[in-house]
Amino acid sequence: MTTKEQVNARYEDAKARYAALGVDTDAALAKLQDIKISMHCWQGDDVRGFLNPAGELTGGIMATGDYPGAATTPDELRADAEVAFSLIPGKHKLNLHAIYVDTDEPVDLDAIEPKHFAKWVEWAKEQGLGLDFNPTFFSHPMLKDGMTLSHPNADVRAFWIEHGKRARRVAEYFGRELGQKAYNNFWVPDGFKDNPIDRLTPRRRLMESLDEIFADEVDLTYTEDCVESKVFGIGAEAYTVGSHEFYMGYGLTRNKTVLMDAGHYHPTEVVSNKISSMALYSDSIMLHVSRPVRWDSDHVVIMDDELQEIMKEIVRNGLEKRTAIGLDFFDATINRVAAWVIGTRNAQKALLKALLEPIEELKALELKFDFTSRLVYTEELKDLPYADVWNYFCQLNDVPVGLDWFAEVQAYEKEILEIRG
Ligand code: RNT
Ligand code: ZN
Image 1 (cartoon, rainbow, N blue to C red):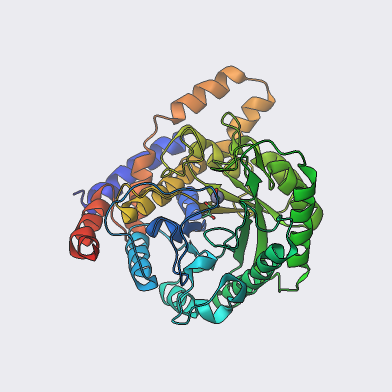
Image 2 (image 1 turned 45 degrees about the vertical axis):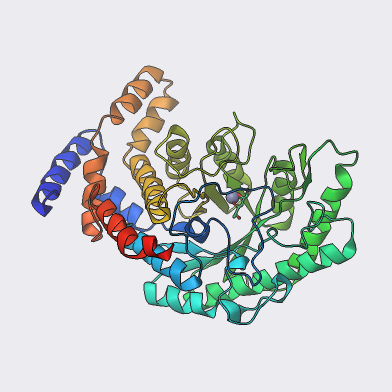
């Protein structure tokens, strides 16, 4: 256990070392304080949700593992998320999916209404959290032949179009009630396992279905629609209707926000290199910060190169206000509350590292083509004590410093999660 005085003293030392390179650590922390992370609810229960009857997880995504303690009710999920948020510095958002309805009456996806999410809103108000939303185009018997909005059968499409429209009203309600915009993300798993003859027609149907959904008027001061592409899914290896080009075109022509998920591209393609291009053509970007391991495996976000590159791109280009940072991972082999805390704190730590760069100086070196100095400084920065700045930030926010959060998760596991069975 480090004492308050130690944390302060180390911060003062770190502050001086960063200042020598032209970095103002207090200013960096003030910026970090303002950046909200949208923590995804679905890490807490392996993407099961509470729809009655709950469907098995489908749509080409998969949560593996059987670590005990998964939440099975909305109350449990909220209790778990509260523990996670109590260990994460700052005020953030919880990202819900439509399958996380909280209601006693059975309700299907084409019938959801704001009232089915009223308890989430009440709780978010109490906790000072924002909410984001996602229509759920999977884990349901109306996902037929691997297709929803692009299915050739108009009745199948109609079901999902209705779902999409209703999801937008829920998101609008979140935004209005909580006084902060709710991002509403459309990810559609539709695709083919093997090589299609016709790639165009399903894409046209998806485009038209989305157009129908978005033709409905909702108040866009309270909600913002996002569209998430993907290169493949399990069982849709050959062709995904909603590919990157599909949604980039869709978003730019319809004024919808393109959401980029770190696991949704060809293995050597990186989201970090796409952000600057998207920023030129779109006012707004949303990310799913995730970690693909050999495939879109949705591993817990760790402090790897790509996480740091993504955050650097946001900060170096001044995109903090235009980029919504959402998380998307689900690991059922470890304590789920710990997974949330590790991933969310890592996203924030990577942001902090990016905020602790002397960006203007580095840009000036590059403009002079002084690549030697650029490399010298970027390498030197890696050795600076960012952890001392981070620990101070945690202390300022009244959350555990360093590893101390883990003891709290372990105690919660013993008292609550293990007993859940
Ligand atoms: C799937 C997408 C999508 C989902 C969540 C549950 O590959 O990444 O974002 O993970 O909506
Ligand atoms: Zn995603």
